[in-house]
Image (cartoon, rainbow, N blue to C red; front, side):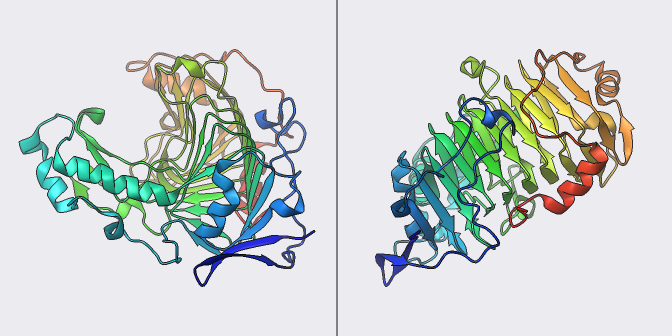
Length: 427
């Protein structure tokens, strides 16, 4: 098979024949196994496995990746990422800093002076500095937002890193993303939202991977993090941390039939949101997602937070941070989370009841939970602890998973996930 190598060579897009990668096997034509979660429903998920030789690419930079993605076309395609691809680069491959995107007179110093709550108040930011921020943000979005279309497989070759990108699977179907280290979807221009959460907060724009309005998606053996610019090292403005990252993997806008497996979510605040908002009733009957054999390490919250969806969460490993931890399993509105044989290890003074948070949720099925090596009945402990502040959750989520691989004990999953989750660990 002939492979097309797309890269910037002396500023010109070139097509070169290159030898096949010397991995033990070519994973790029793998398809989701039968019964492996919600993405295996019906026709299953095959990604770009049917791509002809003309649509198999090895990319080494942003220019090559953009060309291979073909504007989010539905043409069957396989894209292999080699080395480090930095989304914050210009046409010549030179790195772009936040200062390179700033336009219209924007500066963080001026923005902070303009919208300081002590003088601006609680109104939504408006005027010259907010307009300049929006224009600057648009310049960055043009570079870092990369759209993935239907019938696409994206795989990382050995050691591949996608840096600074907001990979959007948008209104697509039949997509596979595997073996990729996706890190630091860094927003240069967060917006101040005075009324968020009562105290105000900084709102960022980019997820590492965002599934929006998409179906039959398999995300497997990826590593997702803020590596390079962790939010914990950002300064505080207006009493709130100046966040630069949104979600690691968000599944919203009616996305459906998704399997996320053997992946590693690391060092982040809000890791995964399933469903837009509690009022997004168009999500009813959709947002069917399976999460299995993933590691959530030093994740503060949303691992995941679920709105409306039927979500099977089994054989995952949680290493819960000691500082600033809020919860792991978020239950909202009409969600139906079916949790089985998950293992939690805490690094600080965390109680069993802290693992769950509810926002008008009604039900959570939980069985086989392991907490610091001991089996626990999570649901009754949560209900007893939170009876004075939140409604009790029932165990009847209205459905029972049938599409799943072998469900191991939490003890076995804890060991296997520690060894096998993340990029570079496909057997």
